[in-house]
Length: 162
Length: 384
Image (cartoon, rainbow over all chains, first blue to last red; front, side):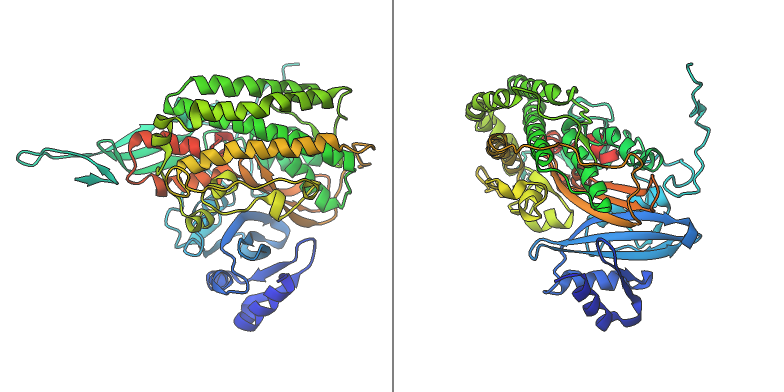
C-alpha cells in the first residue's frame, strides 16, 4: 500500500481529523493532535497497514507558521512498507497525546522531542529531559533559542586565540 | 528459593531481612562503552531495575547541522558514531542527495560500499572484542584489535584518517581508491577470513563465555520491534531484516550475501549470545560483499558535479541505512537555503538503550555488563 491508500483509508474512518495528503519526496498524512492515538492504533492493528514499528519521531520548529510539527515515520516489518504522519501543535502551547501505548519505543523518542523542542506529551509515563541536564533552561532546537552565556559558572564563550 | 530465574539458597533463621539498595554505575565506568550511567536498584546481586541515564556525551550535533550547512556537516557526522563513521557519512550524503535529486556515479557507490563494509568489520571486531573483555577474557580483545588495526591502515590509505574519516561527499566520495589498494584489500580478506574460525575457537564457543551469555536478557521478536531495536540486536531476536537487503540502496542489490539471524544456538532465540554470534556471522557476510565489490569496481568519476552553494529544494526526506549498529534513520528538512532547517538522526544505540530498563529486571548485576556489551552500545551515538 502507498501513502494515498493509507490516506484514503484513514479519511474514510476518521474524517475531519485527517488533513489533505501532503506531497513531496515522501507524501505525509496530516493528523489532528487529538486523534493521533486512535489513528496510530488503527494503523498498527489493521491487517492491511500493520505498522508494528515506529521508526522515528522527530520534532521540527516552524516559527513562521507558529507551529511545531511532530513527524512520525512508521514502518511495517510484515508488509515492508512505510508511512509518514505529521502532527502540528501550536508553539505557545505544544501539547499532544503520547503514543507510547501503541509503540514502546515512543517512550524514549518522545522524551527527546520534549527535551529538545518542548513538546509536552500527555499521558507519557516518564516525561523528563533525556539528553540535556535536568536544570537546563529552554529547548535548543527551537529556532528562537538563545544560547546561554554560561552554565553553572562555566562560560560558553571562548576568546579567540589569534 | 528462586530469584529472577536463579536458584539461590538462602538460610534465614528468624527471618533475615534483605534490603533493596540503589547503586550508581558510571558514568565513568570501563564497561559502559563511553560515558553512560545506570541507576541500579538491586536486592543483593539481583537487579530490580537498571535505569539508564544518558546525555553525558550530548554535543548537539543536530543543532550544529543547522549552523554549518550541508557540505560543512560531513565531518560532524563522523562524530555521531565514531566506531563506525563511514555509515554515518553515507547516511548524511544520501539524505542530502535525496533532497536535491543527485545521481551518484557508480564508481563512487562502489567506493562507499567498500569503505562502509570495511568499517562494519572493524566496528564488529571492536564490539566482539570488548564483549570478551567485559566478561573477563582479555586475550580475544587483543586478537580483535590486531585485525582492526589492519583495517584502519587500509582506510587510512583510502582517506587519510583512521577513525573519523570524513571520506564521503554529497555526490560521491572525496578520494578515488589509491593505486594498488585493491590487491592489498583482497590480501587482507584472504588473511582475515580464516581468522574468524580461529576467533570462534578461541572465545565464541568457550564454555564459560557461552554460560555468561546464553539465556541472558532474552528479547522476543515482538519486543524487539516494539522498542525499535535495529540491526544485529533485531536480527538476534530472529527478525530477518537488513536495510541493505530489504530496502535496498546504493549498489547493494548487485551483491550476493545472506542476512544472519539468531537461532537460539546456545539457549533461547534473542539472548545475548544470539546478538553476539550474529555480529560474528555478519563479518563473514561483509567479507563476501567486499570480495564482490573489490572485483567489480567500475571505471568512472567518484564525485558528481554538486554546486558549492548547495541549496536543495524545499522539502523533507527520510533515509535509512544499515550502519554497523543497524538501521540508522536520517531525517532532514530543507527550507531551500544553504542550511538545513532540521536534521534528526535516529540511531540504533538510542533505541537499544531504551529497552535496557525492561530486560535488566531480575538479572544479576554482573549480567548488566554482558547486556550492554551484547547491544554494542556506543555512548556518543546515543547522545549525539
